[in-house]
Image (cartoon, rainbow, N blue to C red; front, top):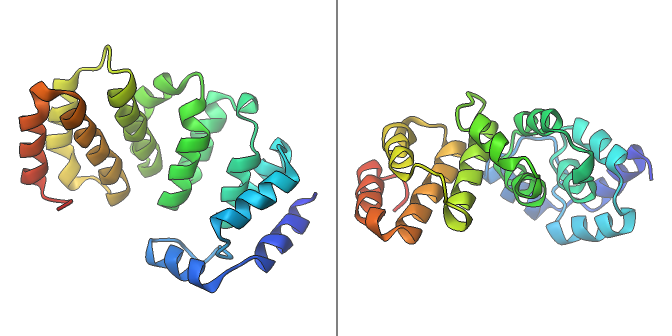
Length: 196
């Protein structure tokens, strides 16, 4: 299947209710509003196709990017490719899918996590905090929990809203998985007061 054919199919699958939902949640105009189930069905039909995935990604169309994530070949992505793709994202929902389907499965995700945690790029920082949140919950060995709490306390209130969400998830996971830091986590969350 060629990029143009796929875009025509995505356009035909577009849904006004989905477009309104995405728009309400910060999406730009470059979308068709395809339901996620329809995207998954189309991905099954296409199967893995890394070259097509990269072509679809370049269109910057939200639905094309969702589909690209589903047909991308993780093994074909170098760290520099991931970095470039992450930094090109402009919609939180695409960032979440990319993180779940691609980044969290990448063998060098911890090295990327460390790099992205200090990035000035909003989506890279979001990805860094998302990976940190996952690591807190699944493999916290070697993490400086005190330092993470201090960063969250000092930076979260002024962070971009896209980054705040994943910083908050890291804070929540610290409170859940580290009883000794639960009280401090709650105090920080209440002090910042973003999510009530």
